[in-house]
Length: 177
Ligand code: ZN
Image (cartoon, rainbow, N blue to C red; front, side):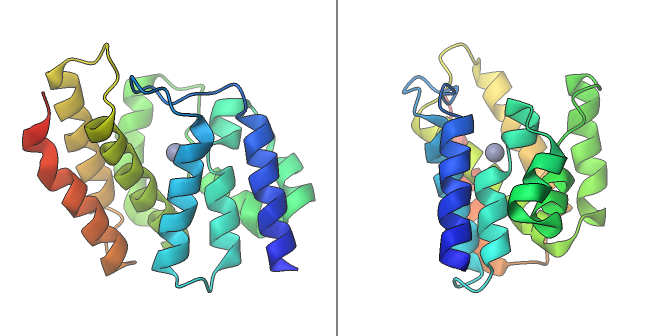
């Protein structure tokens, strides 16, 4: 049954994000990011937490694709819907406020939401290192790294393995150009 739910979540995410690409110059399909985050949390939980993997596939559907929480709830259950909501920014606020709120709210999130956040930020840092957005200055990249580190600081204590993965990417910030 969980295999079925995971397959459905992957299919749902692939369809919803079909037209979306990563910001980097390689412009990878967005599903690559979702697959990476799902793999990170699956590894971190040693395959024992299907809801977390499902939420990882779905984590940007509300924020980027305007999917409604009710739809996720109907398809994947209340728990998954709540977890995705927990890692979704309020798009009514402007970007600077949203970024600050991510830092402030991080320590108050559930353990699984914090795992998801760390995996998401690790994936984003790796992506900036491997394929930086062409229009980002070095300062903008550095600022992103520093902001991500602040969010992750508030998420620590949930998975040493995930935290080490983030730290490894963050440690490479000297390579930013
Ligand atoms: Zn993401």
